[in-house]
Image (tube, rainbow, N blue to C red; front, side, top):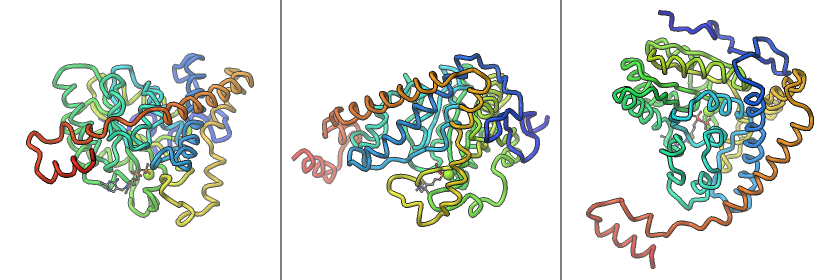
Length: 353
Ligand SMILES: Cc1ncc(C[n+]2csc(CCOP(=O)(O)OP(=O)(O)O)c2C)c(N)n1
Ligand SMILES: [Mg+2]
């Protein structure tokens, strides 16, 4: 069995649209017009909300927020390839994927407002796991979940997101190894956005990430992460393999983090503005919109309606975030210990004053 799927047999990433929106592959990825338009709509909504979140943090309404501008195609295209019952294990940077999965943005952002501790939305109902800050720890969770699905004999596919930096953690290797050994129905989706905070990918990884899959005995594929059609096609193929019982796939989506690592970071201290300008010219939304317009799948009126909807959406989420009350403080202490220690009791009493 070849460990390299047909979609990408070289190191050149799978690409369907060139950065200026010209087809270089077959744009017929099996999506109807409404689906193709939805991909644009979600990317526009996600970007507008992402920018609003940064404003909210600057205004003191969120504590800290990790932006994803530039990564919309990687997230929307991959999330779109999942079926409703499939399950996602995210990092802390997948708000765009969360929106596509139907997670309520106001609930999600309670995490970044600091009014809840990681489970503000219902992971079972949304099929979207909790926001995960400890790097790569969601990968073993995803493996465990996928193993459970395999043992239960369901046809649920599990997809886990992680960054390029996360692949340097032991958790990545342990998870990938077991996924291969047990041939789990799992998609390992790496957003290679070029940086792990201030460390560029090349300074922590000598090889190519997608090629690591072969060592674990399953296919790896490198895809242009700013090409939403290519991301969708690669993920759909990986999901289909997993559902057929053929095991995991590692996808490396090449993209770029336009903003800082988070609102607590000053990227100007470690990277060159010229690189960021070049990345801005490789914008995933612009690329896809150009193609949709030239293929007459959308017109300018549709593009404007997406932008108007995104504006209203961002304002609604802003109002909702500010209006949602914090949960009762005592919840922070409930359900932690069957037999609380005296220091814990003291902290609780102090907090509840
Ligand atoms: C176990 C652990 N170590 C360190 C950190 C601090 N940290 C937060 S994000 C990050 C870099 C992650 O890089 P990558 O996986 O590429 O994701 P990206 O932030 O680029 O989306 C680090 C080191 C952490 N959250 N958890
Ligand atoms: Mg990264």
